[in-house]
Length: 346
Image 1: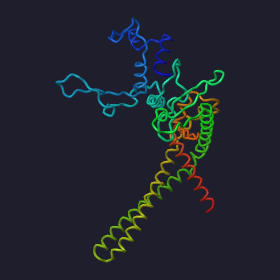
Image 2 (image 1 turned 135 degrees about the vertical axis):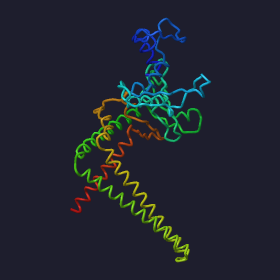
Image 3 (image 1 turned 45 degrees about the vertical axis):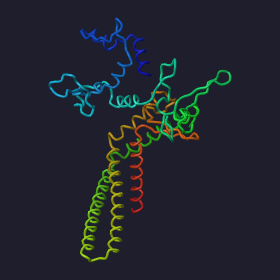
Image 4 (image 1 turned 135 degrees about the horizontal axis):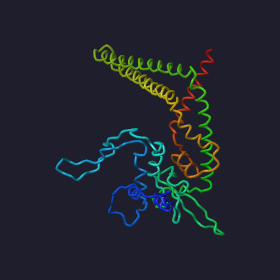
């Protein structure tokens, strides 16, 4: 729901606003902003709560300051300058929920006239060419039937991009089947990772990669020394300029290849570490939606980072925790390759 919709709903349910709650608990707090005898919920109050880290167990202090002791007027400090204490008290909101809400607050999630809930894909659709959001449009057809589609905002404003128009039903079907398949894939990855988590092979794999990293670092060190000796030989007139240029280029290419290999090896080692224990918690996030039957707004925002629409109807669904998913696939691919090589050698 929108922040206004949340405020209206709380007022309908008779939930005490923050001010009324304080008064009900004996506080003498007063404010000049109160317009009625009983203070109501407002979208500002809702937004203030949604952005407050205090509910996640984080205590943030030092948010304001003064230029010097002579000036009493306080100014706001940048969030990076605040004093933040993690786990200072018991959290009542999971950090993952807070982060999800923070991400949603940055999106364009308007609601239609007369509606109190955000549209299913509101703030999630982006143009594959200009990067702008897609907006929801509807037209009435024969017999009063409503045709709903989405179109690039840049195109609608006459900014030059193409329409990227897509039917709402076609979009729903494509996203639903894609995310359902992704959930099944995450479940399969989880089963495989759980099976190999305690295998001695995993530790042996890490040790093997660490040895290869050490060997590659030694190779880079050797190449650097060779380049230094090469320059000294050229400077002393031991080798001609043409040979110097040729050898220098060859050493530079070898160093570049070794550095790329080192990056890959460090990534493989990171994948092994990250896919143990806490590294697989992201899979549980998708497993909660096992056997999903339909898309709801909650499912869309919990499972999907964004949906990119390309001209011609091609759709790319970017799931949440995409980096974790790709790391797991890369790790399993490396593990499978190493196992195959061991069997072939054996």
